[in-house]
Length: 301
Image (tube, rainbow, N blue to C red; front, side):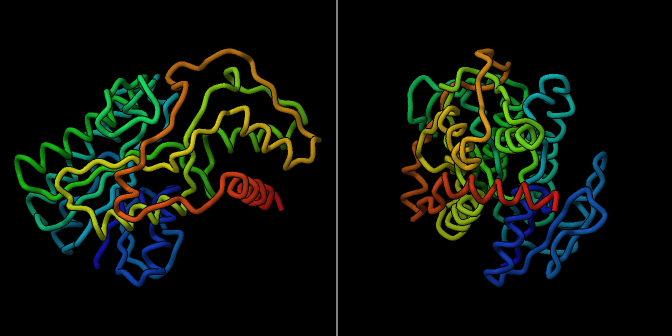
């Protein structure tokens, strides 16, 4: 298969390139960087203000396009909502319109976000449950989902959407685990936002790539939407405890009791839709965090 990965040099995109190359697919990547991180695939540098989607889809027919591009920064979206809209919503329409005009048989897999749910009314949260985003990022991701639905219904483009929950793993240089590692490298005692009772549904990036493989191989691409998670709820206090044990009690993590605007309280995903495709998470959270710490510490060697 010919697979185009947008945002190929980002955290998720980088792992997708590696995964599909290992499966012997023909991989093409696009991103804003001058040079790619991998060898063995065709890479195109695009510009932020005027991405060359028409040129890319005109010169090559793709079987699948995976959109791992866009902004993934909730705090940034709170202060720069227009920029976030351009990255997460407008660019989605630009890509889909290029597919409509130049490569209509290409199947499009869009990476959205669990941020579209906001604070769920019940757990586990199902794909059909109420959407109530708490940030411009969440709203813009939800609008992008509507664009995918529009291009499927009106123009017949084959689309599917995944909503990743808390993705982590080697290469992630933002969000909770990166923040904890960075701060613990400078101090033996740190304080996090919240009470510790907040919870997330973590999925290792290697499991996410396998989940996306299942979708590519088995989903109907009829506007389908899938939660991407492990299906397990873990409190932030439990995450802090894993870190403290990894450091053999030499590091301490406390909580300020103060929430942060735009952050949801509790998440756990209903993953029955992806389980029906044969998916099951394989990386235990404790092992994944231990490996993440080892990777972080290797950066300073």
